[in-house]
Image (tube, rainbow over all chains, first blue to last red; front, side, top):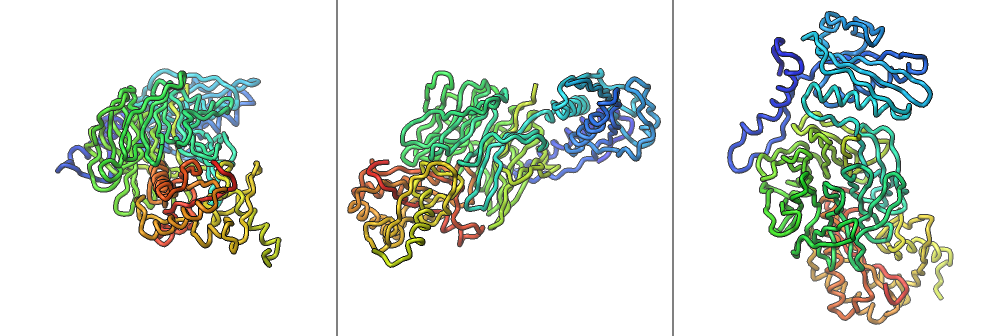
Length: 445
Length: 177
């Protein structure tokens, strides 16, 4: 797909984003249509020359920040970097006029310029974004200040601002991912809770590998993590403070197993599964008061809950029909309506931050898929297929899904992958070793 | 006394220590006699396996009575073969009331993580309910599910999956759990 030159680059990209989503509606026929979307758009060419170092201590930051910005934007699949070797103009100072003709000549439709100054334990990053073919700056210049250790975050913030101005959508680069770091053989896997930047940088381990940890989730403000821990010898939902790493198990009920905890959007409650006598049902815990409410009461398996962004509803999986399917009920419990209706089994539903889509894991004919459907179950689309894909999590802007992909066999290993919600741009997220169960934080403040 | 070399017995007992003690289960294995022994640096209760020729020993229970039953894909109903093994377990547990029991439920890798935790719990409960029906006091038993976290066989074929879809009755010394 390409765009008439008369369109400004920003407009062209907005149209491209919409075009990527449009075909699913047009192709809909019959009660359920399933399609792995592989539409291709032409990525928008951009240039981000090394930022100007405004003093001696800033030169490494000036170069590295530009590299992280380029990696963020190119990593979306929506942008393509024009490499520095092709640049004609050299950036001498942040306030020098932009030589638009030089950037047009190499077809850089967007240009990001910036400068860094460093003094003591503080660096300041400034940037501007230009629409080259219309010869205009896009939005105002911005400035970020922080400690030298947070230079990557400042780069992500620049990339988020550029992404947001060009696409008209929120960004997602200045965010973190909590996940399970895996090591050891398949029959004695060691698991540790860890957090990293969305792009795999700055890994920090939160637990040692002495007990199994599963399926962590960030609180809505990113300051706490819920997960399932075997530290007591039995699976227990556990709440950790990210700052102090202090952890405590919640909702202790003798003779039960608790798992699959998720925060409410206000961060005050936890919806989770409690198993008693072999039967799993959903419960709600008020973290402050410890009050426990049973939400489902069925002999079937009810698990993997997820709140709607407004907190009014919960999507979950149940095998009450005979196999795993997706259901939505009020956040107070009660009647649930089934939303999944295709062939195969559906699990791990996660409500998108925009509220309009449910991401899920699907098993069908011996394969696993990550897919999305609307909240009424319509317009199901499968985004991936492999031996074992599971556990989707949404980027803060609802544009990208990260998930676990595990390979088969004795040497099978889990890794993290991300994919655009159009099904394009499938890529592995860089982690040092095997990794599973990612969960995205909100955009950092 | 057995004529087995003492060193071998010690090794076997160590190999089982972590397994017979899910309360302090660490990075090592689950799964009774077949799991890899874990060295987790923490406190470990050690229960001797004993001599498999001694009908009151854990070794006898694991090897002669049978410590595990297998399940069909995505099922937790007990097959006739499973009921036969569990009837033997119930008789043995009735005759050996000093042992406490933890029943581990497991699933194969063909399923999502949290669903498989629930499925493993169903399998463990099916075994527990059967043992109760055969007269084993409920107070001697606890269940735990490992979902798909602790396969004993590592290939990705039905030959391995069939052995991983299991419930294992793990013994330790002590009247209650």
